[in-house]
Length: 152
Image 1 (cartoon, helix red, strand yellow):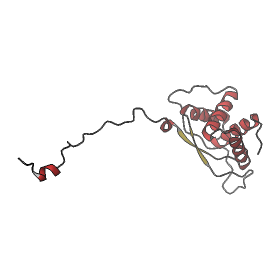
Image 2 (cartoon, rainbow, N blue to C red; image 1 turned 45 degrees about the vertical axis):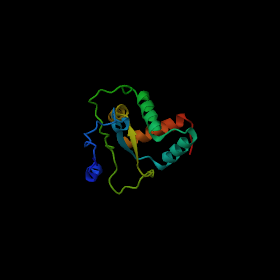
Image 3 (tube, rainbow, N blue to C red; image 1 turned 135 degrees about the horizontal axis):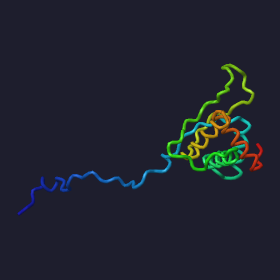
Image 4 (cartoon, rainbow, N blue to C red; image 1 turned 90 degrees about the vertical axis):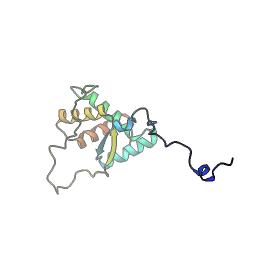
């Protein structure tokens, strides 16, 4: 008995059921907090030189700089921030009026992804010093570059 040619052409596989996701754990980069950094041009140039010389990445450098800065404050910012710590970086409370010439030119902004704890420490440092995020980040990066003895 000969098999039906039409039956031979029909797919025999069962429809695929929904497969479980292959990803077992959440990627860690999604837990990082994007932070916009407005660095002064001179600091940005020094940072570029330092990154090229050390081979460090931008995120690693920002993490180190902010954490060292927070440790050096008096009183120091706690090394481990609590789970519900504020993550909203404040603006400079003493900003000059719009149209005022800048005393230091600013490089184009960069986005750095910070660990949640580092971002919370940055916010706490801003509040403690009554400064905005731009000022604290520039101070932290500049102090870090000074410590590394990096010039432009």
